[in-house]
Each structure stands twice: as structure tokens, then as C-alpha cells.
Length: 476
Image (cartoon, rainbow, N blue to C red; front, side, top):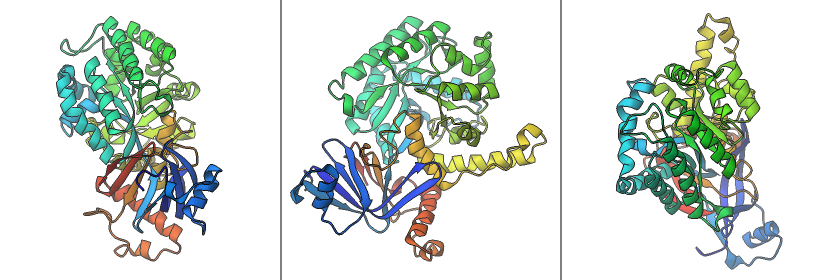
């Protein structure tokens, strides 16, 4: 049966196709065509046989031998894979270190030093396999990675991700200005190696355009470490190859002042990216903690997206991003772990931290004597269902893949996880130990409460299976 073309998952199916709207199919059936990696149909279970159900979805007779059933237990549910819109693969080398420092000091003491060590591609071969496997174990089916400035090590990262089977954007970091001598590159090398990396990644997947797992992403580290010629060249490459773009924006007050000092003629930090064609509908800007009103308007008008990285923003004392305002303004928002500014690769942690950040910001506005801030003191705190949306469908929108990923709908790619709330040593209490769940008025209400527990209590122990493009890439 393992070779059956179709798989039908039977049990509780959960997703959040719309911000704040939890969709729970307590007795669901979801079909996957393993040859395409796509969902062929979703419904509540019926009296029909699985073969009849699959036949109705594909529009032609299918024999029972072509269908495999995957039955979930009463403590398991199927949901879309988690999406990490911002992480740094080499920074796992100093995970959990240096959080007593502000951003710029942290970069100079730890980040540049350890990233520079990846000039040794053999180090990348040894290191990145464990990094990607750890991220996958946390239920992340799609991630936006920053590599380093080194061409060969970046290619190793991309190849490792493909071998493990995760979906990813991978960026060669560009740094040709205001960088340590031991970790810098010329403008010419930066642009040439970026284009070579693009060619390598796309060339390694010739013939896989419809199911390509790894896509190169244009990656200026941030404005202070890039000259105007570098930014201009990267904007041209993004346009030439129609590639996504990622960078950092308005993370920390000292970083903002540094960026403005490098480009004093620009009206704002965000306008620098915009000037060079790096702020558009394919752009993912991390942090955006201290955006001005004009920058928020520019982000909205350019259709750029934001990766909210609350763990990192707390850990490096950067501040609290007002994501409720961004969402209300129509700016797409997803979640990022920002390892190693953030101290964990868990998107579940990012959900919890996002909820905490929203509550902290509401309290700050409430207690502020600044009338311009006080108007937001009645903002609605981020709910569990909203955090789940940001980690799935919201993240897919940020990555420009919301038509393909993020919810469990027919014709979408089957990037999904099976969650087991009763896993060995689970941090989530059992239903019997949770009267609020046990005595709920309906199965739907019980699952809503259970999913709130998932968001606030679960960890990688609860991730039972991880699927990307219909393929099982991890099982506990």
C-alpha cells in the first residue's frame, strides 16, 4: 500500500484559511495524489468507500488498490505545515548566546565571526544537515533562509534542503560595505556570486519547475552593509530572474540611524530599498519594529510583506512590532524565528511570542502619556487562531505562495503536519486532565480549545509527521 498513488487522511482536519477563522473538520477526509503532491479533495467522511471518494475527486474510476488510508487517532489532527519566513542557517552555531547585547554589538561580537567560518564548505556539509533536520522536526515545511557570503557553502545549504525534502527560499548574503575585513566582499564579487548562485540553484533543478523545492532569494543583508552599486545590482537581478527579495528593515533604533547615515539623501530607511527596486510584491522585510507612518504607507503601496520575529525582538531589546496595525493596513504578515537573534527554531514559540508581544504593546499604549499611542490601547489581542493563521496561510502569503500553500484546500500542494497531542512526554495535558475540553458543548468547541492548547503549550515532541509536496520527510 505504501506505493499507492492516492492517500486519504481520515480524522480531524484543521486550518485557518482566513485570519482569525478556525476551520475544524472533526470527522474529515482529505485526499492526496502522491504523483503531483497535491490535495485532490476534502470533505466530511461519508458512507462511500475510499475508492469511490477518490474517484469522485479525480473524475474517473479508481480501484481500491490505488488508495491508501491514513487514519489519525483521537488525539491527532492534520494541519498545514508551519512556515518560517525568516531564519539564518549559519547562526545555529551560536544559538542562545549573546542576548544581553543590542543588535549592532551582537552582530559584531558573534554573528560576523561565526558566519565567516563558513568559507569552509566542509563545515557547511557537516553543519547544515543537522540545522535543516532540526527545523523540519519543528514542523516547518517552508522556510526563508539566509546563508552567508560564501558561494559554495550556500550551494551546500540549498542541496541539503533538497535532499531532506523541505521547501525553501535560500539567499546568498550580500555585504560589500561597512563589514569586517575578514567577512566582506567586493561589489563585483557580491553580484557575480549572487548570479552564479541563482544559476546553480535553478540549474540543479532543471525539469522540476512545477515541483521545485528550493528557490534562490535576493538577499542584501541590510542597507548599512551594502553599497548603492550593490543594491542597484541586486535590484536588477531580482527583476531579471523575477525572484523574491529578503532583508532587514527598521529592527533597532541604532541600525536605523546607521542606515540613514549611509544614504543621507533618502527620506527613510524603507525608501532606500524602494529606490533600488528591492521593495515590491516579492519582498519579505524582517522585523519592521520602528516603521514611520510614511514607511508603512510605502510598504502598503509597494505590496511588500513583513516577517514578524517577536522572539528576536524581545531577546535583542529591539522593540515590539505593531502587527495589528500592519494587518489593518493590508500589509501581509507572517512569522519568523530569526535564529540566532531568536533563541529557538520553533514557529510554535513564534506564535506564543507574537501573542505576548501584542498584549505587551496594548499595555504599553494603555499606560502611555503619548496621545498618539494611546489611541491603540483598545486593540484586540492576538488570538490563538490568528497566530495559527500567521504561521500558515499568512506565512504562505508573505512567501508569495498563498495560492499553492497555507490551507488544506483542493488543488493546493500537500505541505502538512500531523500533530499528536498525546505524544510521549507531551507538554500538552490530556483531555481527561483538562475539564474545559472534556466537558465542552460540542466536538468543534473541544477542538477549538485543544488547538489553543496546541498554540500555547506544544513543542516539537507533538509533531508526529511532516509532509512536503505529498512526501513524508519526517516522522517521530
